[in-house]
Amino acid sequence: MSRAVLIFYCAQIALGQTVTREELADRGKAGMIDGQVLTGTLGADALAKGTAVATRGGTFLFAVQSATEPQLYVDFEPVSGKMKRVASSDLWWAVADVSTGTSHAFHYIIDGKKFGGSGDVPAYLPECYEVAGVPQGKLTEKRVHTSKIYDGMKSDYWVFVPAQYDPSNPAALVVWQDGEEHTRRGGRQRTLTVIENLTHQKRIPVAVYVFIQPGLIGERRMRSIQYDTPTDTYARFLRDEVLPEVAKEFPFRQDGYSHAIAGSSSGGICAFNAAWHFPQLFSRVMSFIGSFTSISWRREGNEGGHVYPFLIRRDPKRNIRVWLSDGSEDLENQFGSWPLQNLQMANSLKRQGYDFTLSWSSGSHNGAHRDAELPRTLEWIWRGYDPAKTEETFVQDPAEKDRPFFRVKPYGR
Image (cartoon, rainbow, N blue to C red; front, side):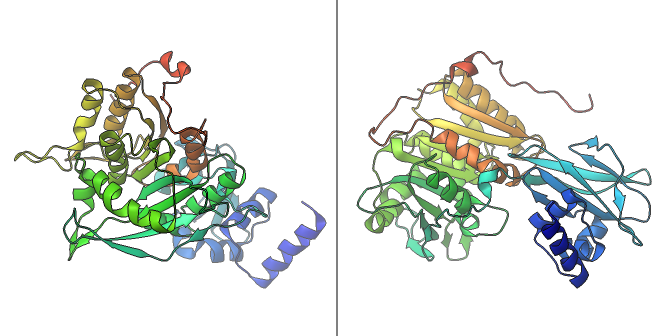
């Protein structure tokens, strides 16, 4: 650390100022931790509950309030070395280096008992942070679409284009379900920043991004009906209603080779479902913690998404590229097992020769792993993209063919 930076940090501590969590992680790595700044930045409540953490990339700063010395565990393993105590306080802190592009778990053992922690802390890849000199794109205000296919349903959506977008040169297309969370800057999702960085670096094509929310009919929420039902209705809704409306203002390419679709949870099965029914519309799928379970199944005849691993094995192969991600601690409930179903999806895609990958973590049912590795996901889904082409036959990576199928190791058995 330079003398100038050290003097700056000391001055801030003297003034009792708070800092960003990224700056706090940097300070931890430099050994410059003050109790007032620690409490002001992370919050007294989080420190008391043992959930406080500050991160920058693979640098994690953990802090907890405890009358006795805590033992820190990261990814279920004890961290070597003792936590440091803030002078004249009951605050303890430690820094650990972790791998980036995934989520991590932590907890403490205090007086022989497990305390605090979280199972899902993202360790962002470098492209998840704003970079000087990278221009920001433009996000529209909220638009509202009224559907005919879903009679009278109103859906909010936003359109985002990177700075390199030129309306006279139609771009690629990405449709993102549960889209509103991806339109915000400065939060856990870094979607806009990742898009800007990768587009600027020419690692992904220039694209029109449609961030769409599930619809409402009156007070009735339509999310599960739209997302979990394995029919072609939602894909037709996009194809025939929403996308033509977007194209009037933001021209994009019409070939499915240039179209991707993404979503998480029920939005994840929704993305796969749209490409399954219309691979000529969406050839690239990003499904995160996908709900390939029986949510929409009814005895009266409605099928559920749990059938997809078996449809993949029995139906004619679609020309689609698929990114799956899930975590070992995902949901187990009356609708099924999220981790097991995603493993089934991966094995079925593998067996049938699909171009796919499964990204696995120890995470639960949230977007931490997705957000941490998003640059890797986008680059993988668009790899080899050639704007001079309108089609490509996707083939499985030869290295995947030599790998074994995914298998399960039972816990505590």
